Length: 427
Image 1 (cartoon, one colour):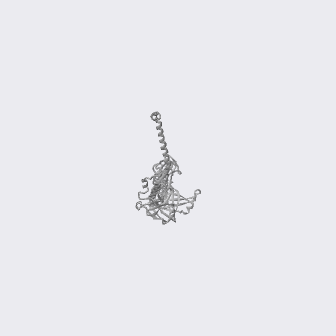
Image 2 (cartoon, helix red, strand yellow):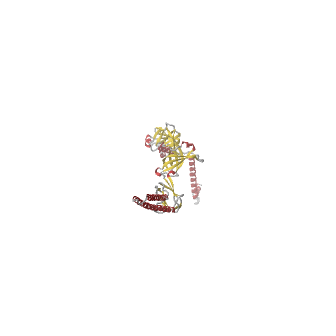
Image 3 (tube, one colour):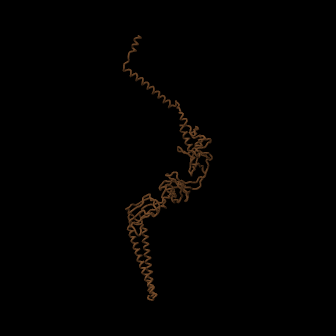
């Protein structure tokens, strides 16, 4: 029997059965590995396996300058060397007198008292325009040339008046000669006194005619200048800039037919502008002419432009319930432009006592403002505060801080960075 069994075990398997056995073994191994992976993943999701923290992550919990997390998300501890190197300074919060300030939105506008619309004095057709929008012009600079028959007629009137002067001068000269002859004859008793008086009257008449002719010439010359022309030269009338400034609008081109009612250009001196504020009705009583104002625009967020109130509107807007307050602002450096939106702060005099801290003491993150309380020994705690108005380099604190508490007034950016770094390390 043993020989028979041995002989049976040595019987070779068919060649097509070997691959099937190997395939089954591989499938079984893959299935087991898949089950093992699923078990491990499920175990980790349930928190069964602790996560190993690399040593490098642990080291990141310490600031290179000496800041470290104290276990609280709103507290930072620094070494004495780190405090010195970061330039952190602390000071007690104190009450100060804040001026009463009225803040109102507004816009910048051209100073109408320093602008001019340039028009034509004659009826005619534009032949030349020497400026474009944006050009700077000087007073009396030629800007527009106009061909006009009215100028030609005025020049002819001037020539006629000048000719009358020449005739009157000759008549006066002849009358004076006749008077001198009458005087000699009167001395020789060859002429009567009456005839001599007639000669003198002729001289007086000639002098009157000459004076009238000169007056007529002067009138004709003045009229030519009024039309922008001269007694001699081209028939074109010359329109000159009435003031120095910048060309804001150019309303004509060569070939445009114009009349004395036509506007040609608009020129304005932009060294000063108007800032028109919309002051709420409830605050209008605190505004008076002559008050100092500060004007800020988005184009220059770090620059404050000084001005003063020059006019308070007589009517209240029925829709916005605001009153227009016009301020004069000096356009330092020519940086301001008409129609810019502006935030206008009107100083309404001494106001109330308020808790205020330096602007650098207040940090901001994630939409909240906070200060750092100095706990001593290099420890600082974050304290969320509610802020009020900002005046100069001070910010009013409405809540979250008490007078006498020591806060960091310099180096808050470093403290904020250390606090954020510690919070990220905790995560």
